[in-house]
Image 1 (tube, rainbow, N blue to C red):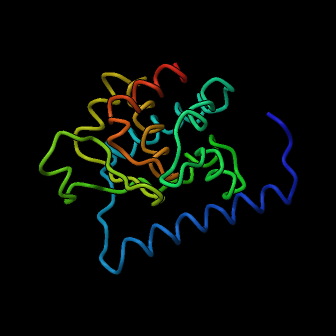
Image 2: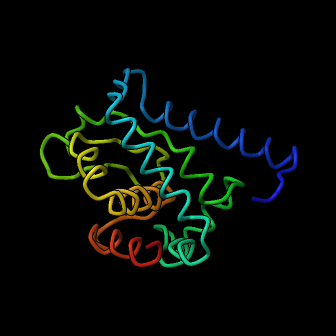
Length: 169
């Protein structure tokens, strides 16, 4: 691991503050329930594994594979934060999605919106993380891409996750 300058550390702290502020502002005044200890532990394991994978040059290519709504590579959106992909994924707030309509009415496990730096965790995610940790890590990378501006359909949800699995192992 390379040494970090005080300036780079300050940028990372500022970026994390910005993510949390953006997530809070977008969430509005209502209080979002916290994840259960089981769900939080599963999310933390998946994020840690995904961050480890995102340190690899081949995995980082997912940021070039996809574009945001304006046609820019997702790497450009990440560069605005001034941190690496591995650092960024660890700064994204993962929130309890038990009351989110997509968690209630569909089979999704994580929910995010293009360009919004937050991810909602549905109840099924922890089970997937325990049974298939590699898939859970790919799913977390998939949602990170959405937070950077990637839309869906096209590409399909399955295509995004498969590309993350192929690039990141």
